Image (tube, rainbow, N blue to C red; front, side, top):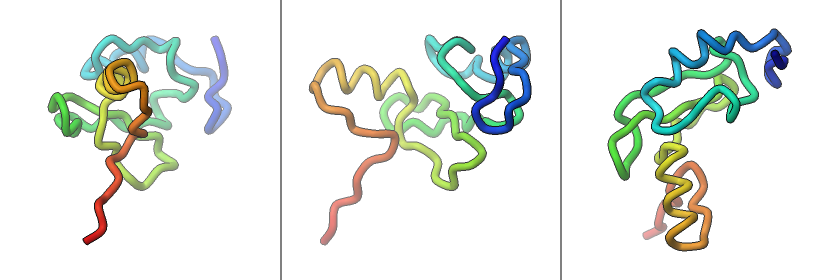
Length: 89
C-alpha cells in the first residue's frame, strides 16, 4: 500500500476502487491520491459524458475524463490537457 501524495495517509484500494467505478478503464494503480482526496464528478466529460475525477486541491472540474484525454492524445498526437482552452473573442 502506498501513501496518498496529498495527505500522506495510506491509500485504501477498496474504497478508491469503489469511488472510481464511473471512470472507464482506470484502476487504483493509476492514482496517487486516496479516496478522501479525490472527488468523482459524474457526467462531466464533454466528449463522452462520462465521469471525471478532481483532486480536492483543484478548484476547476476537468472537461475530459482520463480515457477521452488518452484517446485524443492517441488520435491527434497532442495532449489537450484536462480542460479545453477557451477561445478569446
